[in-house]
Image (cartoon, rainbow, N blue to C red; front, side, top):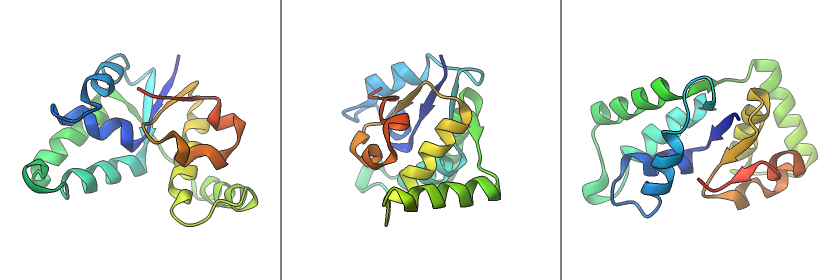
Length: 141
């Protein structure tokens, strides 16, 4: 089975005191590069989130890059070509996806491109406008 991780499922992997740490970590270590993946954009989102967390949870850029390295070691990275990106925007516009929802829609298109049978997210409601081809694959880690 191929699994796709969105940013909300990846960030808790690196925080032992995060409410979703145990579940996210357990799911994360079940996969390898042949069976698990995430979008290239999620690497930037994870980096941004980790380096801007409040208080004691904020980490340095160097530490964030170590965590990004862990993701790259375990998961394959999915990218959309320029044409796929434009097609994903067009399809999302047709579904009425606007504003920040486009970012999750782009992740959904990466998951579909990868052939992911399951999409792991703690924010399933962000994908509700993406249609049954995506929502039927959504799982909490």
